[in-house]
Image 1 (cartoon, rainbow, N blue to C red):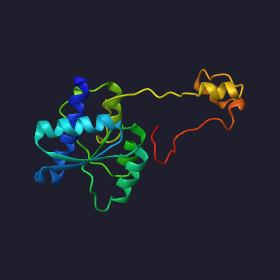
Image 2: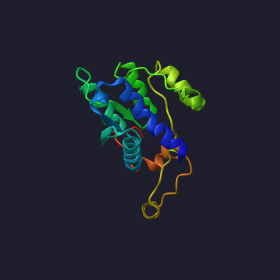
Image 3: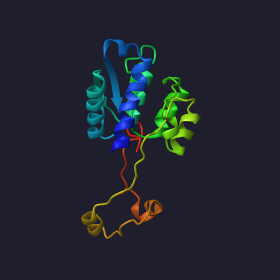
Image 4: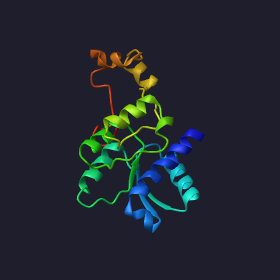
Length: 172
């Protein structure tokens, strides 16, 4: 949890440092991770810096769409949390600004690689597991076995039975 606090606090500080909004003591943030993390990071940052955080929570796809829409006149100071691919897309599209954090040497090697790939604009600070779940009652009713791995979901017996988030609005 201590590592989480360190990086959650550091990310808004990075963008506040390069943003003109930092002078007004307000940072506009968009968060694409769990609501609890979003709220905790904003509260801890405000407590540590005295800078007010105006934060909205959006899935990565929606956040990327917003940044693209406001690219001519950006209104967001920081976007954090969520899956890495949309952040790398945003870097490629010129929607992010490069920055070299003073804690770069503390990041995991996968995060440093992502940072380098993005032209010093994107660096991950947490990982999460992605899995799938199933409704045991529904499987029983339809006489289907429980899937044991991702490859099982491609089997013909599951055709029409698999649901997923919309890729334009969700990063996972």
